[in-house]
Image 1: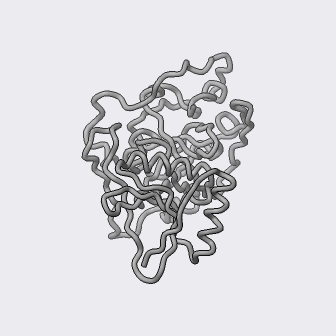
Image 2: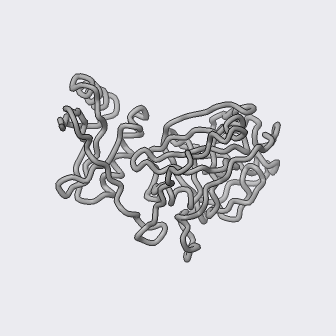
Image 3: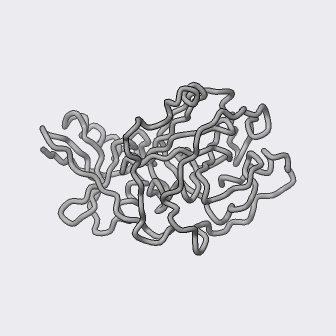
Length: 283
């Protein structure tokens, strides 16, 4: 979907979308992809028109942001790989699934953005040079390597996205403070296969109130439910986490400031999204 409108944006209006085919990793990907450096933000002129003009996909109209503007959002991230590897992006550049790039429906092209996976705290910086995705709730399509570094290869995953502005680039504010280590995710399974477990710990201290949506023996089942809950209520994205506890993978949202707010959220989810949950109290 990331490249569905690439032909129109690039001026080739007669080209039809490619027939549906299964996406995924290429066989024998480069070694040590998890250590690929992030994109380095630079002052690049935002083109007028071209990939930054309004466009329509699947009956929806999109208006890219004009100029050097701030942007921050939370939503679901997907990734794209071999199906589009080597094909033109909306910017006219060739898509390289092993580079640190991304597609976004409305960010100016080119742009740089910081993407964070709140479930594990990992962050990457990508260069936006493409359009997409065009699914409800999804806000960014990551390259294969960016998805690998964030540990989101299993499927759509809640993320936080923030554009890096020209002022931040000039001031160098986008860089991590000196001496602060950058976490490196080293997969213990082949790229494209399920990666090591995403975990979180329960906060210490006073009483915390959580909503638990399910407990599973397999991590994939918890990940699938996390996607469903996120799609039911995007405002819960920063609260959703998978906790490894007593041998099970437990999907929870929280902590909430009090039991009343947790119960109100549970009632709303059940009524509006058909999502059931139970209140969990932890110290």
